[in-house]
Length: 127
Image (tube, rainbow, N blue to C red; front, side, top):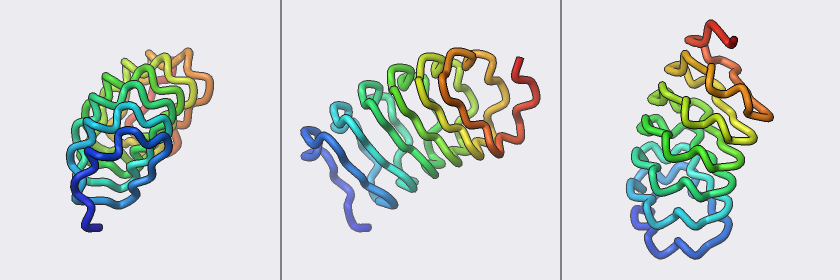
């Protein structure tokens, strides 16, 4: 889509921006309660989104660092192939890492209530 600037949307409580490939800066969206950025392939820096309660980054292949997202309650990282380190996500209640082929070590995720590792081909040890 032609959407590129989302800075005016920070006060919205529920926001879906599916396939807005022109969006790159989501720093103003840290107070949105329920945020879906599925297939927003231009988004790379999600460090400002740690206070979002429900966050979907499905198909956001440019995202690599999710260390700031440990306080998110429900986090969907399906097909975020750039993500490799999920050690900071041990306090997320519901975590979907389906098809995150770069994730290998899930040892820090033992306290996650609901965890999906479907298609995480690099995970070999879940002890």
